[in-house]
Image (cartoon, rainbow, N blue to C red; front, top):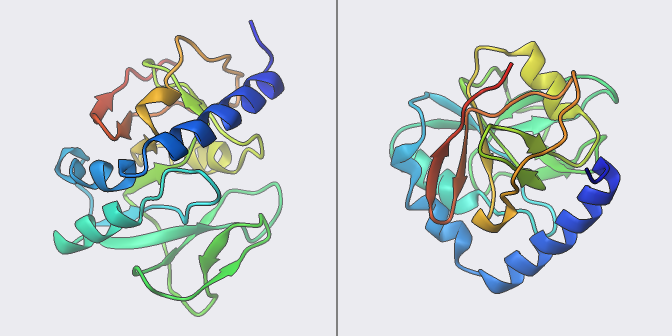
Length: 184
């Protein structure tokens, strides 16, 4: 099996190709907002580079009355925290190098987490960037459903999963929602 660093490099290149080939994918994902599990506070992320942009989905969720938040790296090697956010709010770069709400935004605990990824499999395996922030966060919030946001072309047959890796409950793509089987 391919090592995780090799797989990350391959999947970063593929994700870039998919982003270029599917410019409407973010809007198409928003069309499937109703397929997500019910939640009053939904965590999304601010897209970096060719990540699938969740902002159209955020606007669709907001129109249905859901409150939104974004993750923030406040300490290296720790779980993420989440701060309230509304599309258009100012963002600053956090310790992880990602756009995040300002410190004056209220800290909250989401009841649904939407996460970026490099690759996923149909069993709920997720390949992230390798920092472990989402894995630590999922472990700290085990009852909160976690859904990957991805291009459908990021699906792979099977991912190498280590003991600390956390599984997804589903993946939302430009072609719809895929419920995954959590493997323990």
